[in-house]
Image 1 (cartoon, rainbow, N blue to C red):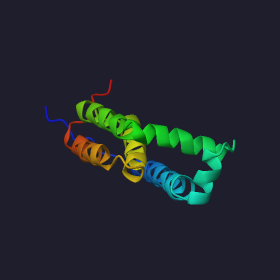
Image 2: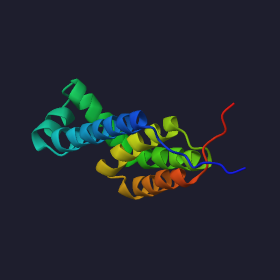
Image 3: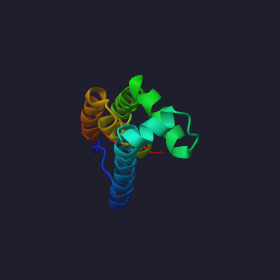
Length: 126
């Protein structure tokens, strides 16, 4: 009995494009307009309490501890073991954040593993 490889429908591809662009877009927004912009970083470091400063502090804590890269790598390994659209979406989102927010090594490896998930057979359906 031959198993077909994991394939995406056109709707799933559109969903992944939306999720990918949104995650990379928000990561770019955080990096260049909240983390690296000196006026915003000085205002946030002096104690300004806004949503932008809160997002900046959360993103800074997460990328300093390699959370985006580790999460993307864990989800990618799970996706290689058992491919699904849910794991692919989570891995793509975490890897998008990780690539932009200074976790490029682990996130790049996760992207490679996510691609390898397409070589696996699709899970059996009941």
